[in-house]
Length: 69
Image (cartoon, rainbow, N blue to C red):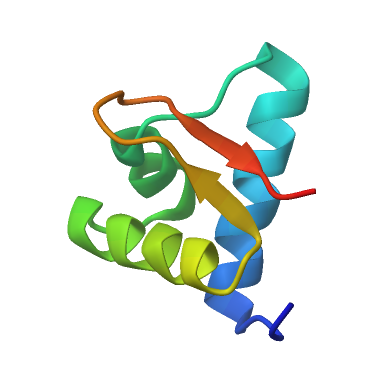
């Protein structure tokens, strides 16, 4: 897997904590709210994490992110 920027690391850590605590992934809006970013920036960071292989995304569902194995 490719190395992460500090912003990507913050978002990945937030998503990991959310999944461990609640058992499901946060929405893009929840990621934005918890990390102090806009929804567009949060979506972009999530897309970068998917491209780097740290997350997997299912399309068509708001909470369909999972940690890559």
